[in-house]
Length: 263
Image (tube, rainbow, N blue to C red):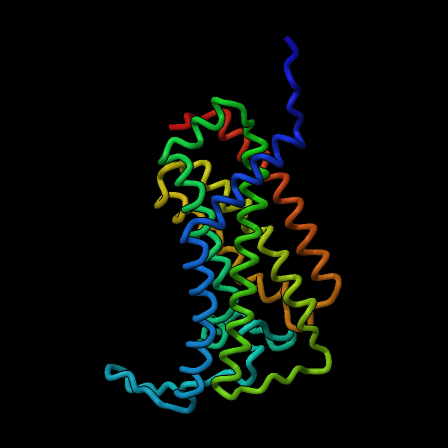
């Protein structure tokens, strides 16, 4: 009797096929992508309607003037020279960078479902290896995160058109490279969230808390890594950072799966 040898490539293709099918047939991804499409429309329309309105704090009497976006692309990114890390206004905080926290929810829910249903234990018992699982989850969740970012970009164009905001770009702006760097930056966050998820396993709340806490430390760096005037250096930097972290954190995730119980 001759047994067929199942190599790494075939195992990974099988795992990717299963994970992509599970990812794109469950409601979670489409609910989150739909939310990412609607959010920029609501933000751009509402801030434009409230531009110049004044609110007064009844306790201190301090007046706050609502400022809208100057351009529709401002919700995507700002130039390197315009970024102020100490600014905490709405136009600085309510932008596409918030979607990197959405990715934590996507990764956490996707991985936790494997352990809650017993799918992960059965998977590793039958044939799959820990490295195959980690690589597949990283690539599939990265694809889901990219879809959410693209949905936000589409929502920005719709929201800008509805609110009447200009789509003008400065001479030094490069929207294509800016979006490319933001898409590749998701490859930095996904393995980080996956590390927390495989550690927490079925405890979704623990993976979300850990992911959000570590994500906050990187949040202020996003505008510097993906500015509106991004160049090829920013794109390559995000790609290199994503590959390095995917390999490094992926190796740690494999060790966690090997050293800990799967239930």
